[in-house]
Image (cartoon, rainbow, N blue to C red; front, side, top):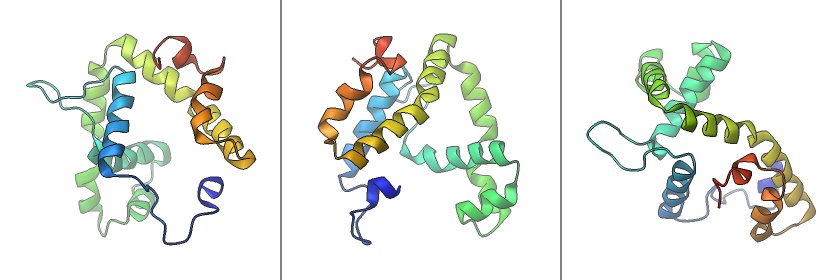
Length: 150
């Protein structure tokens, strides 16, 4: 976070673009991962509204501490937090993902730390964001090697 926001004024928004731009980018990620982007009779796609409860569910699995998750999520009570937790939905959804798509998700998410490290280095050295895609996908990103980012 320090690299990304070090020059930003304290009152600057975390996302300086429109909500539509954020939704469009999120939809593009879903498409790359070959996940549904439209609601059907049998599926409901992920959207930005699933990020907080999904993150809380992930954190609970990682820490096994409901109190910690409640504090981090700033929920006043465990009962309110339970509304957000999606353990059953996450489990049933992930079981329904085709193995090829599940592999693609694991492949791309496994590279997140390496890509983040490179982006921080780009920020620290002043490389303009317009050049990042080309630099990241040069022999380092398995997703692009598989033809999923093109």
